[in-house]
Image (cartoon, rainbow, N blue to C red; front, side, top):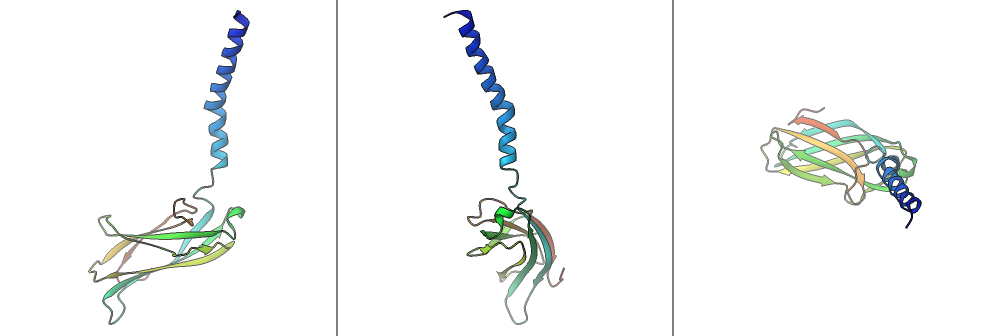
Length: 151
């Protein structure tokens, strides 16, 4: 093998490395950059209360949203609400059972209850996800709630 063939092969190897290190990550980042930003999520109302005559505590959050990625409009999506104690222990996760169809703008309510609980304060985290609940589609909303104080 002559010298020109050897250096020609090295050029292709170097070109391959340059493309792999510099070009592909940039293309990948732009192709997948919207995850978690397809929907702008805002808290509208939050309640943590003990209904009269009941032995449960109710958590109710109402959110409003705006879809920023046109490809997400009319898709079935879901959402989760996680409830944590004051020390950060996850107490409960609830989600929208069959998901919902994303409109350009809309609202979604999350409701759950805690049975026989004496908890006085909680932290909730709400997030819209894909229907399988594996990929984030929105920003998350974190909210601290005190029993019987509406926010």
